Length: 315
Image (cartoon, rainbow, N blue to C red; front, side, top):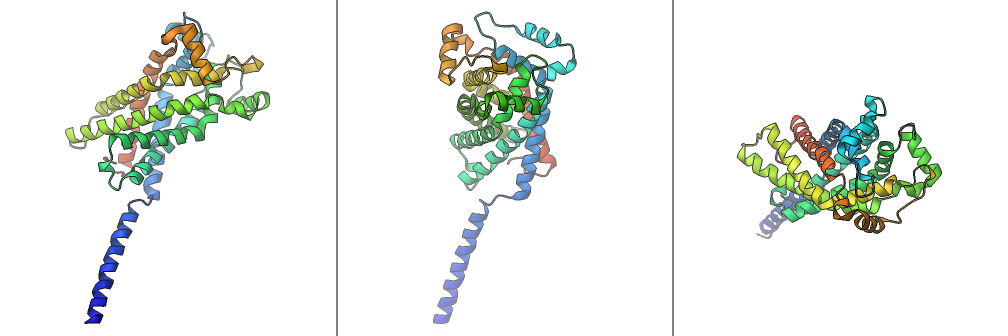
């Protein structure tokens, strides 16, 4: 009798242990899945940014212009064309790809890991939890890759011939301005990326869920593109003034010129005083023309690459 009771207790204990193991397994990162997400994110980031590189450079040229009569988009394109080669429209894109590919890969993969860590079943995650996971993932990726963001900005906005490429730019910044220069503008960048990534990722995932239900797990390409464009547009409206602040901080001090701003609040205060509220959104139209299609392409390529690699369409 005692032996039977002991056996029953052992079996119940074993059953509970198995249940606990199953629960723990849900939080263990799957290396194969993680690798597939990293590859998908890297490809998505590289293709989307290369497709919109000319508009990205134009946006930066508009952002660094000061005064109440800013350069127009047409004047910006003329300035790039005046440099004489087609490569002028893509200046800084090599750095951009080197930066955005790992950044997108890290952001989207880490977002997936964080969602699984927050709740046992990702289908039960709330919009607020989605935003938190997206914000943390975006902020972490940005912090890791930030020095390349500064190099990319310098290559895009400085006159032709200032730098000979990625390594020349990085070397000159290090010699002339020191290590701290690589992190110039990181505070507004981090403050800006948290709401941007949170809104963008949460909005896209919520839209995707509805679209998968509506189209029986097979939404058309243009629908996914549209969802990505809409989510990024909402995110940009929230965070754009901080993106402009970051660019102005990164672009100052080139070639030994005086550093004009002391920090993020100084840029915001002087921009508002000298250029008005619209000055905080200078280049926003151009950025939207670049960011919306870039985000749409990025989300579409990410989802299609995941599908091709065998990752669940609803993950």
